[in-house]
Amino acid sequence: MPIAHNKTIGKKSSTDIHIEFEGDDNHIRVKNGKGLLQYTFPQQWILTPAKEGRSKFINFVTFTPIEQELTAIYGLAGRNFARFVPGMSHIFSRYSGKVLEEDRAVVESQHPRPIPETLRIEAHVPADGPQVRFRNRWYDFLVNDEPRVRLDPETTSS
Image 1 (cartoon, rainbow, N blue to C red):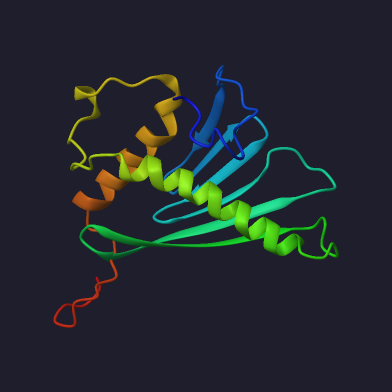
Image 2 (cartoon, rainbow, N blue to C red; image 1 turned 180 degrees about the vertical axis):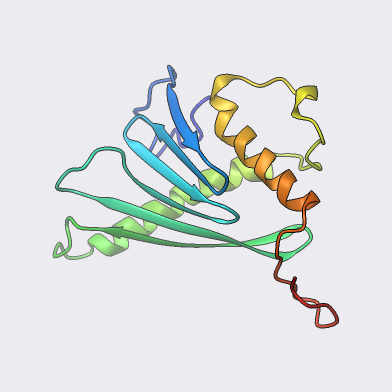
């Protein structure tokens, strides 16, 4: 299924997907239709409308590693419309929960494995560009001497 959120935010999306992206060492900007995802390495993103308009919806998410195979995801959503409609915050909260459940289905269906040292052993399509950019950056982080925050009390951060 090409649309991850086919019952919520993507149900009217075309399967003819055109992704535009750009990036530098620590940032990736992905435009797909009406959305703009701005990712900042190593673990946060902001999703906003791709075009400026009167009505805005912003989704800010961070990913916090807890253990080797456990990550906490924290998010904050905001909007500047329907602010005074009774019950609207509850409706948006429930809708966001449905979107997250669609995300969960996709994430839990994956079979994580270590990032290969070379991405050439995998087949990629143009829409994989942002992920390839991220994985190259993540691999650089793992093999280089960048400062790291350590939770182990016996070690110090570099």
